[in-house]
Image (cartoon, rainbow, N blue to C red; front, side, top):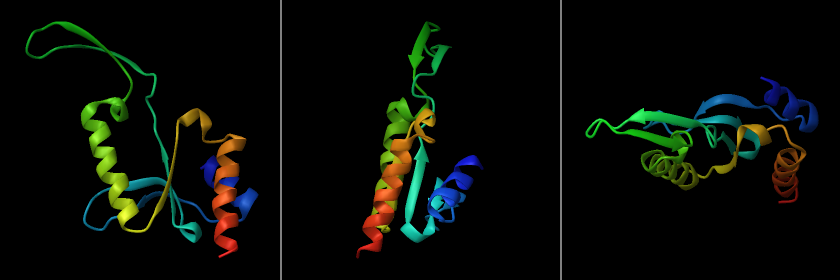
Length: 118
C-alpha cells in the first residue's frame, strides 16, 4: 500500500493493486494506474538462491533467481507482457528494491507528462 500512497501523494493519481487486465486470462499487474493505462510489475527473486534435488538424477542442484529467471517463467512473462501491449497497455518493470526510488518516480512522471501534452 505504500506505493499506492506514494503515487497518490506525488502525482495525484489513483493506483490499483493486483489489477486483472485480460478478461480471458488470470493475469494481473502488480500495480495499475488507470489514467495512464500503465501497468507496473515488480520482478522479485532476481538474486534468490535455491538448492533442490533433481527429480530424475537425485543430484543436488543450485539455482540463482526466482520464477522470472527460469526459462518457463521468462516465457510466461513474455506472453503476459505481449498480451498487455497488444491490448494497449504500457508496462514498466522494476526489481523490488527500486520500486520506491527517485528513478522509478521520475519514469512514471515522464509518462504522465507525455500524456498531458497529447
